[in-house]
Length: 429
Ligand SMILES: *Cc1c(COP(=O)(O)O)cnc(C)c1O
Image 1 (cartoon, rainbow, N blue to C red):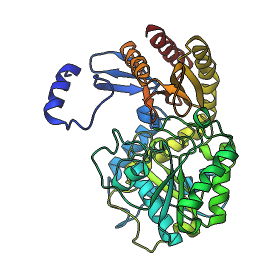
Image 2 (tube, rainbow, N blue to C red; image 1 turned 90 degrees about the vertical axis):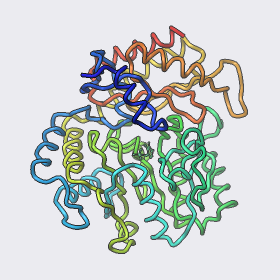
Image 3 (cartoon, protein in one colour; image 1 turned 90 degrees about the horizontal axis):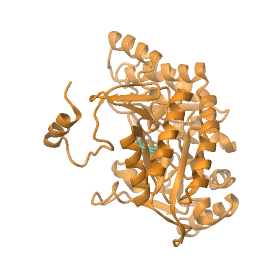
C-alpha cells in the first residue's frame, strides 16, 4: 500500500486545491470507534465523517445490505423504473420523523440538494418567495445553499453572485446574546415582520442545533416560538436535521427535544451509514403541492444507498442508538466540564447527546457579543489532538468551537481514550 506521504504527492498533482483535508494521513480501514491509516497508525474517531457514520463505519448490516443490493441491480433511476427500497425508506422516514400526520418524502443525494428541494417545495406550496435563515447557519455549498449559509470564508468567498430572496435574522445563542428563548424569538420575529413581511415568507429554515455554525443550542422556547409564528403566518417551518438527525442528539430527531413538529425536515448525513442519500420529509399537503415531474434527479434515492439506509435504520433501532447517544453524553459531558474547570479558555460546554462541543475564548476579554473567541488556541488544540491520534473537528463562525461527533457505536473504552487524548491536547498547549 502506498504511504500517506506518497499519496499526498500524487494528490497535489491531481486533486483540486480547493478540496482540502483535515489530516495528512490516508485511510486504510475504519470501524467501531477507530480508523487505521495506510501507515498503520490507529486513530480514535470523534468525527464520524461529520456525523455520518452514526452506526459506525462498515457496519455489518449495512455491508450485508449493500452487497446484496449491488448483486441484484445498481441503478434504474426511480423516475424511470421504480423499486421497493425507495418506497421503504420513505415509509421509515414518515414513521420516525416527529409529527403524527400524513407525510410524504422525496430522496436526493446530498444534504445541500435536500435543502434546495425543501425550499423549492415551500415556495411552490405557498406561492411566496422569501426564505428566512439565521445567523451562523450552514445549509450547504451549492448556489442556493451558499446563500442560505452564513459564513463567508471558506464557503462563499468569491463564489457569488448568490440567490435572492434570502433574509437572515438573529439566532438564539445563549453565550453571546444573553437572551432567553422567548425573548430571542420575539427579536427575530420582529426583524422578519419589519424587514421581510409575514405574508411574503415561504419558509423559515433552521437547524435545531447548529452544526458548522458552532453547535449552537438555541435557548429553550426559541424553536417552538418560531414554529408557532410560521404556522400563524402561513409559512413552512423547515428543520434542517442533516447533522442532528438519526439519533445523534439522543432522540431520532433534535426537534423532538422541545416537542417541535416541523412542516418539512431535511435529512442526509446519518441516514445511510456513509452512502450518499438525503431526503425531504413533511406534511403530505405541502409535499404533494408539487406537480408530477417537478422533483427528482438521476441518482436520487439510488437503490444501494436506500438498502444501506434501511440497514442503518434497523441497526439504530436494534442497538437503540438514541440511548447510546445519551450514554455518550453522560460519560463525556462531565469530563468536558472538568476540563472547562481546569482551563479558563473553555467558555462553555454545550450540545445534546453525542453532539457536544466546547467554545474556546480569551478569558476575561469581551467582544461585541460575549466573550472574545480564540480561534488560534482552538486550532492549536485540534492540531495537538491530531498529532496524538484523535480525529477531532472544529467549527463555529469564529472558528473557536471544538466539536465531538463520535460514531454512536463507539465503545466506552474508545470514548475514554478519545477524551483522554482531548484532555492531553488541551494540557499540551
Ligand atoms: C452538512 C450539512 C448540510 C449539507 O450537506 P451536504 O451533504 O454536505 O450537501 C446542510 N445542512 C446541515 C445542517 C449540514 O450539517
